[in-house]
Amino acid sequence: MSALLEVRDLKVAYGGIQALKGVSLDVAPGELVALIGSNGAGKTTALKALAGLLHPAAGKVHYAGKLLNDCAAHRRVRGGLALVPEGRGVFARLTVEENLLMGAYTRNDRAGTGVDLERMYTLFPRLAERRTQLAGTLSGGEQQMVAMARALMSRPKLLMLDEPSMGLAPMMVAKIFETIRDISAQGVSILLVEQNAKLALEAAQRGYVLESGLITLSDNAANLLGSDEVRRAYLGG
Amino acid sequence: MDILLQQIVNGLVQGSVYALVALGYTMVYGILGLINFAHGEVVMVGAMVALTMTQLLAASGLPPLVILLIALMTSAGVCMALGYGIERIAYRPLRNAPRLAPLITAIGVSIVLQNLAMMFWGREYHAFPALLPHSTHMLAGAVINDVQIIIVLVALAVMACLLLLVHRTRLGRAMRAVAENPSAAALMGVNINGVISVTFMLGSALAAVAGIMVSANYGIVHYYMGAILGLKAFTAAVLGGIGNLRGAMLGGLLLGLIESLGAGYIGDLSGGFFGSNYQDVFAFFVLIIVLIFRPSGLMGERVAERA
Image (tube, rainbow over all chains, first blue to last red):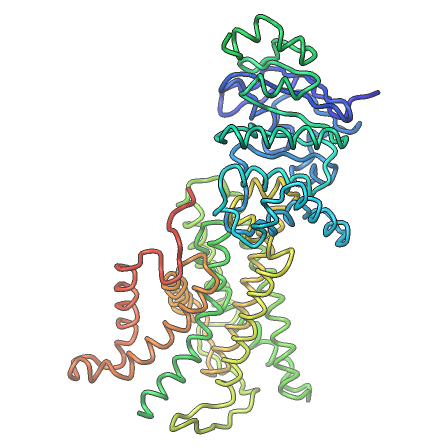
């Protein structure tokens, strides 16, 4: 089985600072992979580069067998690559429903979009209650739901999530992670970036540890959870 | 009483034109956060192209209304191409430059367009042919002619269509998404540059319509007509709350009314000290007062939320 996403020696620099110094990672179809690391390790940079928002200085990104390097961000979505960005990036002045419809922007099947819209409202009943409300008036957790539902509306093959637990109450974090597992169980590949290493590794099958722009460890999630290095650095024990 | 009504009629007609031009400023500001100071010149080019078309078709024997429609289509087409080109050449390369840079290129484009128009159409005033019926009607003591009625109706129809487009269509949703958060919009699969180009082209088409309206109303076109009209329309957009479509419409109509009422009453108000030639002073005075109390304009929500 070949990887859905194959990243080789990815290097990204912002104005003289080398944020990624050669990152390689794979995500297989249907797999849930966690990318963990401390603040400033380059996790968000990695996801942005994969989504096409940043241009890598070197390295190769293959997605579904195709080289993505020169593919513009808005074209990657059509291929089934979706990113829920850090800070959620919901359109505050659009209604919840309009946000979800933005997620289906690349799709031309009205009927299928309608069906998926109803599916999202089943998955997130809270959003169904608030469909005509402006997204900016929602709580942080509800906005995270909007961001995830919006990404799912594009029918992604690979969903990349950047810090979905950030700034949320513990109850809401549990709810969001439950949803992530559901999505994964439906066969969507997921690349999950998290500061909350324990939560991420408990949900994931495999994990990578990113430290100042380099992958320092990669293993299956259970081994990483048990490893001394990870416990010391990221699990506070 | 009939002076009041007459000034209201005049104000609504002028305000309709301001509103259409103000929409062009506000749409571009809403999506890029920059003031397209070349927009007034697009109005002028629209009027000039329409003039040339009517001259070319004058001997064709076509009915005047058909000539006007052909002129309108051509000038809208030329203006859309011009708006696209302005964004492509003067703004896109500076997308990530400091905010002053595109302001300077905007002024540059404006000067270039004025001079090109002067070379092409000359420095003199041209008479714009009367293609629309000009019969006058009495409306409760005020005089209004067919051209003025058509201007107000067309402006209202165009504004209604624009609101529907922005609030009810996929393209409109994409425009609002790009305006709010361009990189999130790109993550949804929106071609940001495409949406920005469309925005410029839409605003320019409105400018063409406005250019023909002023020309038909006053019967005169001139290479410099875009400068003051553009400035007034920009004022209207700020008055309404720049970036807000309904604000631009309201601001345009209000500015037209204020100017017109100011012209009608400034003499009485100042005891004969100021004449109606001070109507611009009056309009800008009102703008300053409004901005002192509502710095973000009448319908603006926030100011300077974009870095």
